[in-house]
Amino acid sequence: MRFIHTARAAVAAACMAPFVAQANDGDSVRLNPVLVTPTLSTETAESSLSAVTVIDDEQLRRQQPRELSDVLRGQPGIDLTTNGSFGKTTSVYTRGTGSESTVLLIDGIRIRSATSGGAPWQFIPPQLIERMEIVRGPRSSLYGADAVGGVVQGFTPDGREGDSRWLRAGGGSFDAHEYGAGFAGSSDGTSWSLAGNHFATDGQPVKEDGEDRGFRNSAGIGRVTHRFDSGVELGLLGFRAQGNTEYDGGDTDFMVQATGLTAQIPLTTGWVGELQVSEARDEQESSDGSVFDTRSRNLRWDNHVFFGDHELVVGADFLRDDVDSTTAFTEDQRDNAALYGQTLLDFGDTDIQLSLRMDDNEAFGEHVTGGMAMGHDLDRNHRIRMSYGTAFRAPTFNDLYFPYTDYGFGFIFEGNPDLDPERSQTAELGFRGQYRRAFWDVAVYQTHVDDLIQNEVDAGGVTRPTNVDRARINGAELAAGAELGPWQLRSALSLTDPRDTDTGNRLRRRTTRSLRVDVDRAFGPVTVGATGIVQGGRYDDAANDDWLSGYGLVNLRAGWAFARNWSARLTVDNVFDKDYETAGGYRNAGRSAFVSVRYGVR
Image (cartoon, rainbow, N blue to C red; front, side, top):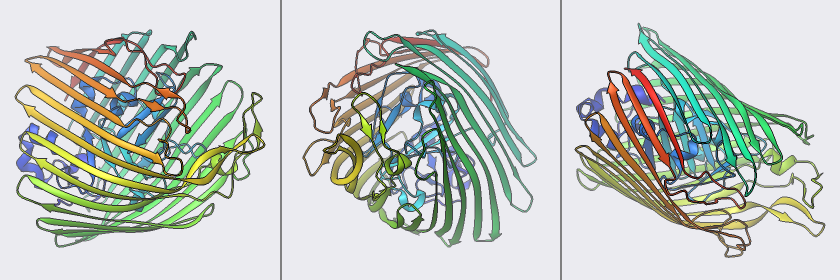
């Protein structure tokens, strides 16, 4: 059965009436968490009509990740590549789709570069994220362009759960050091949080026989929300990460920033409106003098109308992208206006979701996407779901407008203003078993992508993107978890076959097999754990000539609550010092250790 509440307050909604019965059982809450990203309304993982993964604050704290890629690697349906470790270019492939086809949100604000189209995954500090939701499958009908493979959303602390404060410091291999602090609280209808984190490392060589390439990232997040007696709620969010990353041939200063103002307004007993005004910026300046600054300003109005156990969501969305660069783009601004609607119908054992969206973009015209899904409870513990959805990926500013450029070493690139958006259709069938202390979820899917945007070299030696290819992606996923006394277990198996149907070749840099297992156990104040990740090989090029071998990693961790409010953690990653590549010529970090001490009151 679907549980419905208004808008995006996932953390607050988790404490509300329909879930009080579970609140005293931490295992069931962790195994069947509340989430908000798939439908813009709160629901449990069990009742969701999408394949979902939730990573909570306890999992994040145990694993002590240095980068967001440490959290995402090996999760169900997620594959990624990195051009080296520590702040180097990271691409995320959800269910075999392209690196521009996964939307990244921070507290509902979309984060991306308008020029490249991809999210700056390498610059988002996981130390400031309290919770993550991963939704797999098309979501263009709610989130617009590029949500072909899925959506990843990070949530930051908001203070609703009571007063808390923390301090953390640590250091380890590659001359890495980190320190951070934060506090949160609430009083008289106002909740707030403020946190900051600094991480720096001398890094390691990203190419064979190269020099160490460092990385530093200073980040902060602040939120304040007030609920008036009338029920109106106003919220303000600010996030910023800035620093420097080094690579062979130079370095780049970066800044990623998001600001947002949100208002929730109960218009009638069964009608709640939500207005969000936001701005996201991605700015990079390289040592060669090149500058790529992009800004996305968004105005979004959602209306949640409740009738009985059903809900209707109707909204409008306006997005403006601006580019300020030393590279002279033919166009440096474009607007996108959209109207969308979603119906959530609850018929007891059966739920139905219908959605439709129309985007009008001045660069590529009008585009309509939609989806339908149905879920049915087979019995108290088992559920089947089916869905079909369409999506599209908009050509980026680089795809469309990048000027004719000769890089001086035999590589010439030029944008193509005649590109059409990629269009996709996805069908999925899923089953879930949900028990008090365990769950499993199986999904099989097939995605067809038309007008696939691929870079091709013409007779004159110029590389430019064209709409010539089609892709077909078949896949299956298995996720499972259990809380057995002091043991906590999680596992994920992903099988994917991403093919260019014109050539029969596997799509570039995608693996076909991935397995992740997380095991943790408590011994009183001491916890120990391990993560094992195994991934198959991949081709580094579209022609399938350059093969990159698969790899296996083992990461170990231990924690000790040695005094009241004090704890220490040790992580050892890549214990067996595996040398592996996910992008040709770029080495990932070998064995590394990191130790930290934390003071926290909650």
